[in-house]
Image (cartoon, rainbow, N blue to C red; front, side, top):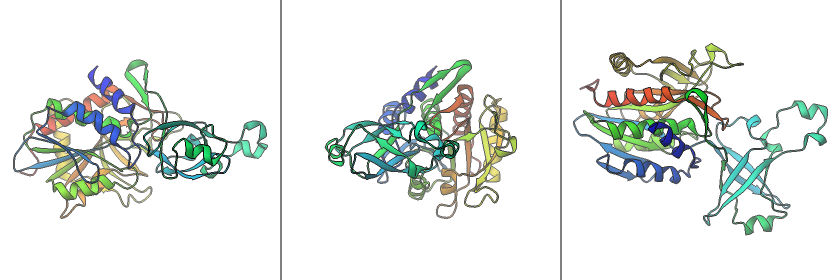
Length: 353
């Protein structure tokens, strides 16, 4: 299955915000010869251009994954760290990590914590906050850490394998948003667009949609689509009202709105013509399309739609469980349908001209 092989390749490389170059290598290898132009802009976004015409469509998928950054090296050789956004504290203890040094070496480590044998009863019941955690790289002094090439400011990625689960499910650390990257690659390779398409593999989405801000401003598209993942409510302890009853195996989700919990501020609302375009295209192709409203987060579409004079935008997402846990789960059939939907959109009549 081609999408499985591609998704594995994308998820097995590391690319925390600001350090996404390894993802570029995979994307470039896959798209070279299938698009009209490939380049990396000043911000680090990889842009693939295909097709021509008066109408331009920007399709974004972010390359970065949530990760960590070294903030301090302690005298006894342990590392303190900060989050590169979006990670709940309770998933961090005991994770194995890779530290990328400026010299080019990669150092393995583990996120350590106080042993359960040494905890009080109250401590055992508590979620350990990040200030109680540290990275152990097997060093006994600050000097030994520096000798390994590690410095404050070095990026840290979580080390987690790509797993194939039964019944067409997969588990990986960075399905958000390498799933979107995979769909964009496949659609660009297989389509003959009726418009000028900018496929943008954006940087630093997890820390403020930064790559989408700069690329949309530069490209000035007529419309935009963000390819993403969408949290599901189809497992224990999740409530349907928390993610619009989105489930795995029922097709991609069209995100109608997103933003802060309770108010949906600082997010996006889908443009009506974009909604009609996506819904009608999915219906014509027999593609199941779930509807979703996401509270508690937003996507590149927010940045795209507010660029310059405004860009009508939408979000199409692959449903995923356990997002930002480093063990995200999706069903390949949903991703395949999302890819087919995007290909159909690229080959259809644009909604505004």
